[in-house]
Length: 516
View (cartoon, rainbow, N blue to C red):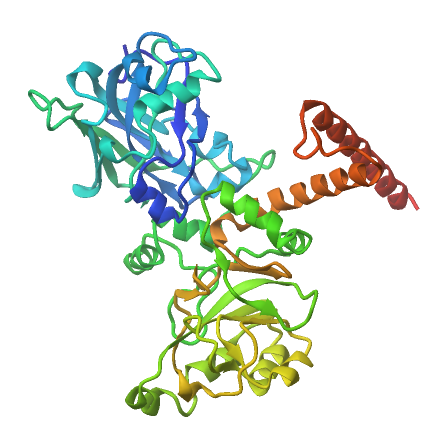
């Protein structure tokens, strides 16, 4: 027995399972998803964990770990809990600096030695029901995480049942059941403690505190593998929020963002729109991207009621935001004139950005006019989106810049709006938009993609577009849609063979060109 339990054959971890964490990450999964951790990552209470040389984003995740007793295969959610023998505490450490290299597998960023402390003791599962457990985490004595198993998106029994559909859960296997909000970065010298207990059960049994001390590693990564790499998006996600990152910078425990904000001195949101991601999104239809977002739990990211001023227009860019509030004479007198928020927004929008305007769905006045639209075009903006009206509509339509709106209206701001603020979270057409979000629009409308998932959505949407194009070719050649759309196993095999053959042909062509 080590770490309070027998050494497990499998350690399986759940990505998102607490509503508090899902809200923090901005996505709620419809079904659980998992990854494996090696048994060599186990560590006992009192051990140290190294932050490798050349890295900065080592994050803790306090979790409830459940240990399988009787093997489980094809069990029901109602019976899943019966296969749990013990409950203990775990800390699912991860190194954000290596997440990009893993592409979702978590092998490198969560598989290191000591990255799964567990224990110090295990509690019999019979001590409480599956809804009766609590997890708490402390960093340097301060409570930073606390939640209970009755809030889980996917209860313990359901996790056991789901996994047992795919593989046999054997005696001693461990499932890490997810972490609540409050996970953040720790630095050398920090002490992290995790405790799981059942406060409502007889005797309030507890695992005791699982203690891990962070130390600095001194062995650099070699040149024979992917090296650590981080960006502003990783920094903010690792620390938990921009505010927490900013506080860490002030305390000297975090490095500043790479992209400082223009003007105000506040940290800017990172851009997720690399040239590669932009190209992938530019080749995918909004409808296809929408499907990829829905699979990730994003159902309210469509900016309703807007259409393009040029048929066939597309926009892809990062959001810069402008917010109007309802008209009030005294406020308009104070904030509506001079170099107001509206003028500042159009004067500051940058190359590749989309200016997104919150007009509260009020189309009874113009929120964009010809002079401001021209200014945005000259600045290199990728487009303008407003859930209000456009003044000087014909003149604006004569410009090259794509403008998505509710249509024309001749009135000026003072009829319905007061220009209020820029670079804040807004609501446009019923969708929440944050500065730095990725905006994509075409004839079907406009979507908002959270920056943190833009790359993975782009890759999936591009792959789906290629698949849909192949299906369309088969239909055009006379194939029935039965079994083809969506593809059954036979059609799927044909598609994959065709894609492989095409890839080989492309590679041969590239090689021939390179030899000229």
